[in-house]
Image 1 (tube, rainbow, N blue to C red):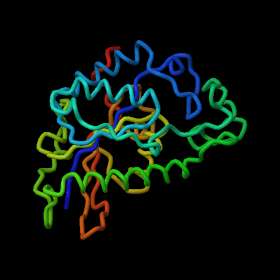
Image 2 (cartoon, rainbow, N blue to C red):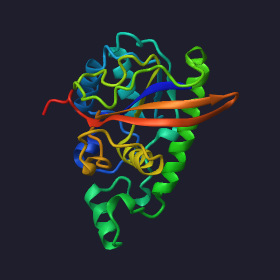
Image 3 (cartoon, rainbow, N blue to C red):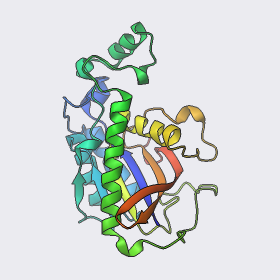
Image 4 (cartoon, rainbow, N blue to C red):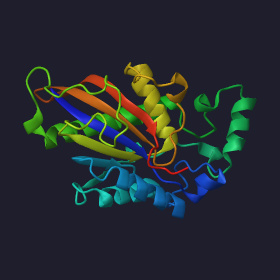
Length: 255
């Protein structure tokens, strides 16, 4: 068995975010000045949280956010950033570059809820879930390879901190977890990942979480955290357990 922490962070704000425009995959925007400040704040918030692995979407806004967070970190400022195209934002097809409200109107005209609506030439939720599963498989393999010395026979000895009341600290849930992956990605992709974790994998919701928050779009540089346990047998890896510590945390963002 191998248990590790997984902290997922949405990229900082871009000008398109501010203007209410859909970026998707075709618009590869850099961070705005506000987005840079948000990423610096996220980096400061996480500065004493140890990360052993970093994975990031290959889009500018995510890579820039990850670089800022890692630069601010006291333990992993020289860590490798593994860019993975499986983490890039959901494709919104012909709606990319248009206003978010226009896609909402398209969904309404089609009689579908916005998250389930797929614009022409866009990705369905199921197609994004395939990319999510592809990424998880790559991440599991990399973490098991990098941390073979942490693999244990039988149950893991890491104390379960997910059932206690959270202290509201940056290291909630991962204080005694020696392996910890940071993933920096995108809002719609993260929302679908939450659906995959809670609905498909049946991850229990953390105590006190309003069910309406489960699938809401994470704010720019908002954070979600999970504890993953892998069953490692010979060359095979399988997800054994998944626990959620928190979702959409934004304590570092000043209102």
